Length: 234
Image 1 (cartoon, rainbow, N blue to C red):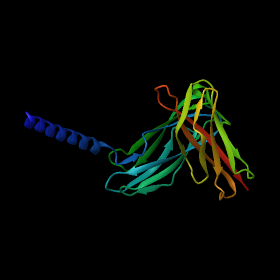
Image 2 (image 1 turned 90 degrees about the vertical axis):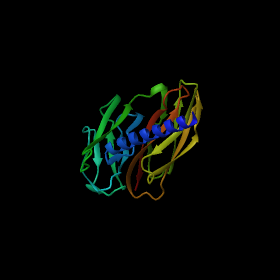
Image 3 (image 1 turned 180 degrees about the vertical axis):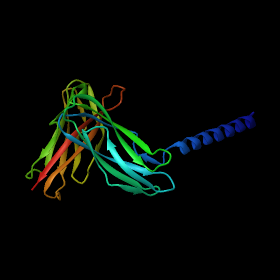
Image 4 (image 1 turned 180 degrees about the horizontal axis):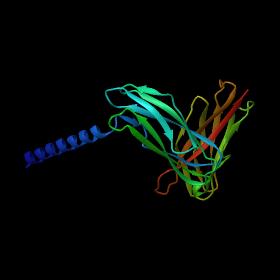
């Protein structure tokens, strides 16, 4: 009986291995490091940013011809590029939330010399001008003039028993840093964070954003909120 069980497990392992190899061989060589992007809740009439990464998983170089956004609301900053095997290339997507309200779904398309999939796309979404579950940022964006090096922001928990920040991502770490001062808030309380400008910023206007993932303690997926950041230096 033990021999039969061992044989059966061996056969099953071979089948799974063959299926996995077949699935992997059908995947594009050029792939995004993320299947989709969710900015979550964000205010109206702001520019928000995301740096996408593409990895060449194949054994030959891949030439990326163009990267385009779904509509005029988004811009792509990308330089024509040749991606060597197992190398990574990045491009910046800028999404303007003006003229939108409510849920928005868009996509980014990549045209390349990848023979398996010359046309590649990924999706991004946002809930614009809506503060779901009445969790509202104050202010809705961070703006710092030259005399300021730090600024405090809050997320107000108006209605839920408890919320907790479980993660946050900052798109451009060269512009600022984020420090969580209070990562948990009961009903009627605030989550608090501090934005610290990079003291070595060059003169000009520097734009970025960060996205917080918030556990609502309701057995549902975390809520995301994106906060735009604008820092001016003379």
